[in-house]
Length: 333
Image (cartoon, helix red, strand yellow):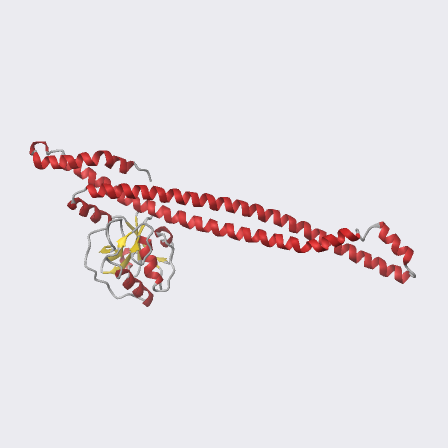
């Protein structure tokens, strides 16, 4: 997300609000004011919706960083294990080096000269062959172990670099989100109380009195009741409870109470369970918004959902048919 919307508001919205005041004081110049005030409100609304997308990008970057860090740890463990296996062969390699290669011509000549009989010679030759085979096997095993160590160490180095890059990308995403969030909050505060409500109604949907329907399963029922118990808690980017939530943090928290683990990402949640149509929605189903998906709520029945929508707006119950609806998933039986 770029900061174009924020910049447009920063330069234009203050002028719009000033023009709005001028309408009250000097009606003769009021013709352009409502249009300018509307532009200011629209700019803030667009930023709120874009914040949802940027918040989702942070969730995805967080998951990527965690995966890369886990891969780096696994690669480092594999390298350490490979080194330990190579170290375990060192005593045998030292013994082979100290005694000399047992399969040499000199070793066979010594056996011939010291053997007291043909049977004794055959036995010594067999022993020499066995020792030589063992030495060859140890040397070959050590060579393979060393190659494994080198490969594992390279993989560990690459994984560590990828983890560092992923963490840097995550921090950059977080910084951008915080920057845009601060701009949005300042811009939102400049709107009139009426326009603030309008923005929230567009982004979140108008609040309604909750009228949940019976859930189809115990897990879905627990999730719905847990989500509804959070109504009034404030939205916070990255929030996953118990007192603040973002959209996927709320659904994750609610389903955790029912023993169902969900990722902290609306897009990741949209790949779970089975798809259901709008007409098939049941309490507990997850409903998703925007393309690409960047918002999730929980259906509670009777055309309603509970969701955490945008900074400055508490968790609330609204119509599931607010703008941007794209799909739904059922994550319980």
